[in-house]
Structure formats: structure tokens, C-alpha cells
Image 1: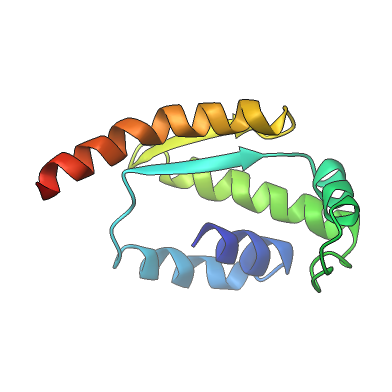
Image 2: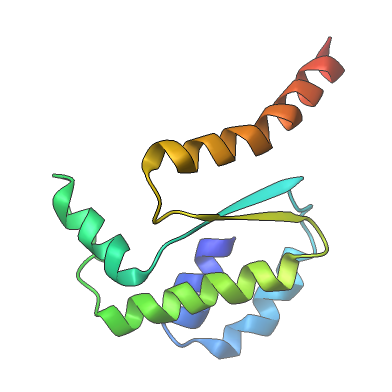
Length: 118
């Protein structure tokens, strides 16, 4: 959902789809927690080129496109904040630090889910 809004509606400049996007989102329940890994487009793009992965079509897009996508994620999570819990994590930090913050937030939710299943 977030990526569709960020890439297609904002990144591709298809603002005319925003109303339809939000209308369809009301049909689906929001998660208990959304984790938003925040990283600048410059760092994100640098990471894709250094990791030995196969570039995607999005990796070849301009820096301006990636800045619009980042703004789209900001807009999406601002819109759903208050309706569900949004945890913003600074993903420019060390990988282990990012994992620690995410696991600390998700752990209690997983534990609660497991106790319901017993």
C-alpha cells in the first residue's frame, strides 16, 4: 500500500489517482504497526549500487524521482498515523541498530499473537 502510493501516485506524478487510492484503502484493515525505515534517496541509491544486487528499473530512475518517492512515503505515513501505530526508524544508522529498534517494537506484538493462538 505505502509503496503503491509513494511510487505510483507521488513518484510518477499521478495525483489524480490519490482519491481513488485512499477510497480503496478504506476497504482493508490497517496493520497494528507499520515500520517506516527512513533513509535519504542519496544513501538509499548508494546502498543499491554497493550490494552486488541486480539493479531494478527503479534504481535507474533520477534522484528527483527518488526524492518524490520519499515525499510520497512521508505523506502516506502521515495520513495513516493516528489510525494505526507508525514507527519511524532512522535507517541511516548501523544495520544492527535499526534491527534492534524494529525487533523491540515487533517482539511484544508477536508474543501477543502467539499467546492468542495457544
